[in-house]
Length: 408
Image (cartoon, rainbow, N blue to C red):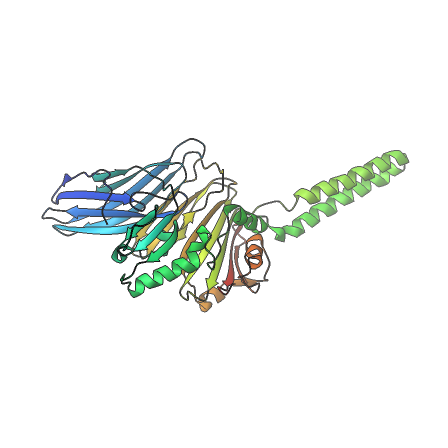
């Protein structure tokens, strides 16, 4: 991959010689907003000593129409003397994002930096694997099979992939393309792929869980006290005149109607609902969507790499998100603001039946997301609803498992 030059800085590292950093965002320097883009990074070390540091990626959205927020990524770096390393990192690009900075830090000190301007693709991104035998159409990016990202999430901004004659694909490349075609391409409206719900649909599904209906006994007790007091006052006032009693009766009925309208709308302290869609064409990976809600601001750590799904026109002041790599893989750090839901999506290894069985099983219920997928013609209505409730802390976690049939 030929890197679109951003800024290359080589500085002296104590005991480590010279380091250099190159980076490119997107496909031939063009990225897709609202999707996961490949971030190509290469770090070189020409000195005699080893280098241990952290690669830090940072981006800020401008405080304009969408509001100001930050996103970041941290990944450990270790280089032997006179070596180099390359990564294709996932980078979910937010709408209204400013330039991207990539920094190599050693012992907290900046040693190299690359600043990347954000250039949005003007046409749907199409990939052509291998050398084309004729001129390609505008918007087509030619990629050697060896440079194809293994993670299908990095292909979420791609609308079409063509395999050229003579292109040799390994088993991992073929699996990545099948996973993209089955679980990811639906983000660009591809037929035959699992369709992806909008952020608004996920928030509708969240509302069904966030407002706890299991507190019925609290509402029933409050209504019983209300009716008892009203009846006692009615009995006394009825002795003084029928008009006053009639007005009190009307006020009591109106109060009960208003109480019934607002009483169930008490959200839990923290709610997480996840939809896990399984497609038998891909036996080892599921596509996941998750919606989060909190009554108070809090930070949430999620296993795996999750990309956020901001709603259309959503104001995102303070809705920060970050990703950290460790030996166990990616961890996503999400900032929740008071009363503001957040929606995300991910690909993850399919959980075993035994692992899912350890969770409490609730009755299967339709929600806006599962109903929408069933109506789309490919999802089975026989989904499983797995629920975990921490009653002592008023936190609720729900996993809905749906099966999707590709025979549509």
